[in-house]
Length: 265
Ligand code: DAK
Image (cartoon, rainbow, N blue to C red):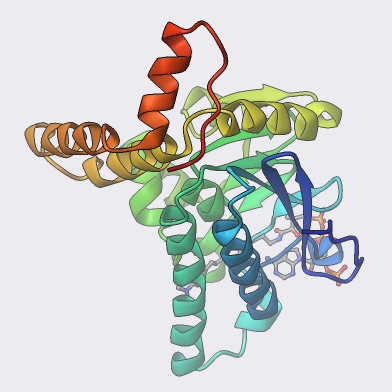
């Protein structure tokens, strides 16, 4: 697939080897999520999801200021109940798509990740952030609550009290707080963010694709389950991997002291 450099494309795609870099591209509105942007993101996710050459995805925002400053407030302001519900369904399907993509999605948080932007980070596998990134769920300042999973995923990730403090105050937090609470796994200098995220993604992309898909699926499935049930899912997935060519190749390569050449099968 040719790299997309069309400036007015709402989600740019650039491939670097087996990694697709998707850039949300509405910088004048701080990459706020409106319906066209969400629809384009869904298309891009479908594209990279079905492209066998792509084994990992990095998601970032255009411009220096924002990853995503939330759902588009101007678009939402006059919604009636039916339109709001439709918007929620479009948004939820995008977020679910990330979970079911079968390929790791890493957020490279380059600036504000507020509201729906933070929820997008929560939907990714993990996040690397610029030291200048800012995080928060300011929905209550607008008279609403997080609607793309924030009330559920943030509490599971950083704990009930931390999540409620964030949600009930609507405060904006610095990158250090996000790192301390485990919302992001690494902070880097702003100008190094993209290269570090791509480098980590390349490393992920070099691993067995069937195993990557299984690992993220089992982690997600187990999140809500009693440990014993989660462990059963892990054992079942572990067993299934022994039917894959990737398992044969990975172990043969180790024993033959050579790098593995995974086929994703
Ligand atoms: N929506 C629309 N436009 C936005 C925006 C947003 N969320 N955030 C920023 N912009 C626009 C600004 O209006 C401004 O546009 P112009 O005036 O230049 O035309 C431009 O981006 C630059 O922003 P500022 O001039 O405000 O820049 P500052 O540096 O002064 O401030 C800021 C940056 C990020 C602190 C500020 O822009 C800000 O507070 N933005 C709003 C942040 C926010 O409240 N985000 C949460 C949105 S609520 C749902 C599912 C999900 C959701 C809701 C419902 N359902 C299930 C139905 C999610 C809700 C949210 O995300």
